[in-house]
Image (cartoon, rainbow, N blue to C red; front, side, top):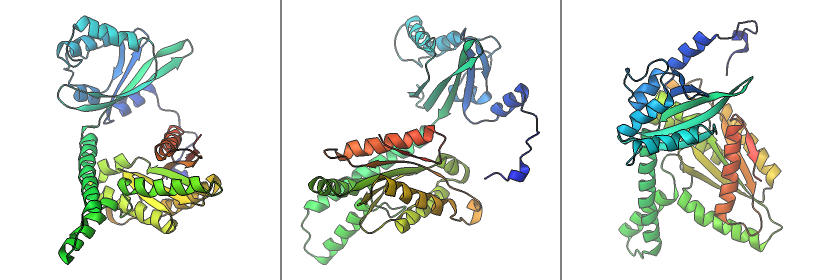
Length: 340
C-alpha cells in the first residue's frame, strides 16, 4: 500500500513525453492506432514480441502494411495475403473492444487485448496490448497433464481391491495425491466434483437447507511469480491455502481449482453469510506476514459467490460463481461480486 505521506496532490500531471517514456519500459507490447489505421505509437517490447524489424517500424507505417508483412511471412496461415489482410482490416475498422489468444508460427502464444480510445470527436483509435503467455500456458498444460494422470490413478484405485499391507500403503499414497493438492493440501478439483455433487444432492432433497460457493483468486499473482519465481509463488499459495483451511469448518469443501484460483463450498450458508465468510478470509490474508524476500508483500483477492438454485447442476453453479469472479476483476479487483 502506498504511504499517503508520499502523495503530492499538487504535483503536475505527467506529460505526453513522460508517459511515452514510461510505456517504453513496460514488458508487454503496446500499440496505438488512429481512425485511419496509422500506427501512432509502439514500444520496443511490441517489436521484440512480434519480431518486427526496425526498417518496417518507421513513422507513418500503417496497420495494413504490418498486416501484409505478417501475411507474407505466414503469420496468418495459408491463403491469399490480400484476402487475409482485408478480412482483418474489416474487423479492426469496427473498433470493437476485444481479447483473444493468438498462436504465432514460431509457437509463441500471445494474449491480445484491444480497447477503443475516444476524444471529443468520438472514436480516436485503438490501444492494443500484447503479452507473451507461452510459459504460463506450458505450465498450465503440464498441470493439466499431471492432474489427468492423478485422476486416472484415483479412478483405478477406487476400483482396485488391495489385500496386503504394501498395496494398502500404495493405495493411500496415490489416493492422497489424487484428492489433496500437493502445494496447499486443499482438496483437488477431482475430489471436489464428487464431494460437491453429494452436497448438491443433499440440497435437492432438502430445499430448506442452504449451500453457497465462493470462488476467488489472488490479485496479480502472475507478477509475484515473475518477480520472485515459482518457488516463492508456491509459498504464497501455501499460506493462502492454510488461511482458507483456518477459516473453514470441517463440513466445508475447500479446493484449489488450479493456478491461484480457489473455491470453497459452504453447507448451511446463504449468500450474505458467504459474503461475511469472504470478508473474514480477505482480512486474514491481507494482514498475513511473509519472511525473507517476500517481507512486506500484501495480498488482495477478487471473488465471486453463488448460492445453489434448485435444479442447478454443479457445472452451472461453478459457471455463475466464475462469471461473478470475472466481474470483480473488471471492477478493479480486490472486491467480491454476487452471481446473477
